[in-house]
Image 1 (spheres, rainbow, N blue to C red):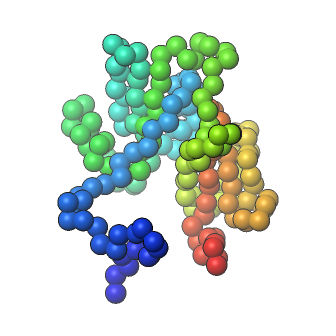
Image 2 (cartoon, helix red, strand yellow):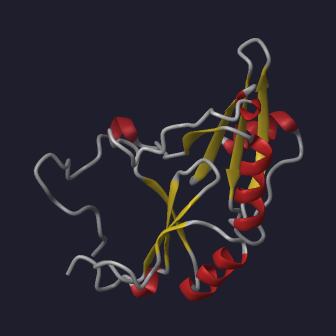
Length: 178
């Protein structure tokens, strides 16, 4: 038997045929300084920049990042790579409004301060302890370490703009919510 969905009030048991082929492609976050954020997401989190799009008339740039699987490659042609990027899953779009990096007082709302809104991103890792050691080596700020609080085996770190990132090792979470 194939799993379809858990059932709760408001959940449609069967997706509408009109949604066939819909794919969650990306989530967007605004960043203050692209050099600092790109270093974090590429060096520390292991993502790659698939595409950068500049919009000079509106004074902003978009960076589309992805963690490609082994053997996966994006097309070389810019147009083909743009189309390919918008067909993927698990893309992170970083939006930089030009000039924010030059304002020492500029800061985006992280979604976790009041009033709360956006919560966090999540990365799955193969070895939570090794990931925590890597984050410590890179002097990242922890919101929560895996041994803290009531929910064990889950960590939260902050990115350069203060956004929270949950870090999980999937096989350690079989007990979660039971």
